[in-house]
Length: 370
Image (cartoon, rainbow, N blue to C red; front, side, top):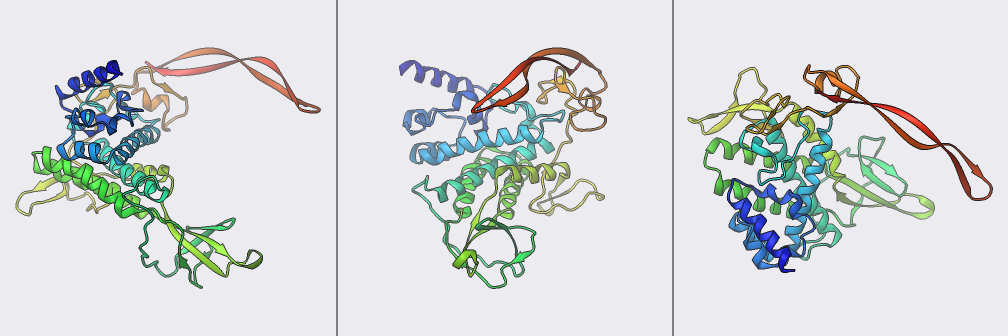
């Protein structure tokens, strides 16, 4: 036990000697440490966090562990969304978990800010309705549903969607709605507070806060109305409805689309506002991602800008598609390696309860960027 604490404290000491961020909780060293979050000494050692964030760890260990879980979910989602791109949301096993990239306000950084903020709000809101937290529960508010809201039937459940059925005959609120308000409050108090305390440049602070909020608004925009039918013989004479959040994959996909259309901005000191850098660029709204710097090519390894390059990345021979060798390898070419694998084949079912297969040798080709 002493050795485990020593290793943890040694790791924290290394972090404090260089620039870090709350994203450092996503390092492998901080996974499966939920029990440690309940220990005051451990929380106090997380000096890369602000005082308020360390206080979360000490006074709300369960919330803090969900925040930690949310970060891991956001990292997995980021790597899924960019799995076939030159930048594949690569991680650095060091305090700067995303490398020096976070010091530049690129579209990639904007995406990370929005995604992590959204993940915390999403996970906390779901944890409330699941009864995982004593600080919150089901959302009992009854927001007004726009006229003509469409619903999609799933067996005995209806989920809001673009479908052919509407609630013309009304419904009653019931069930257990995800607590978006509590999720939003935790996301804002834990993440936004850090920006106001450690970010000195006003334009950087404004951009980070904007992207944090964009992530949260995407979560709110994707809330679904789910209903259960009640009635005799499968009829739907009464609908009881509640609000639920979709799978986080949907949030990640929408933010990925926002990343593709992110707006480059500049600071107007006279008006104290952010505006598009070029007049030809579209005006951005509260759900759009914004940035200062353009993305690097990510073709070559350059740790100064947080790029691991694409050398050694597996690619496919399709043309002009995500993950293709022509795009991923940056015109350096690729090498092909032939693999031989053994697998089951010609499987047949034998009465009564047995499946018999032959073993076949299969050759496959894989391509890797030079």
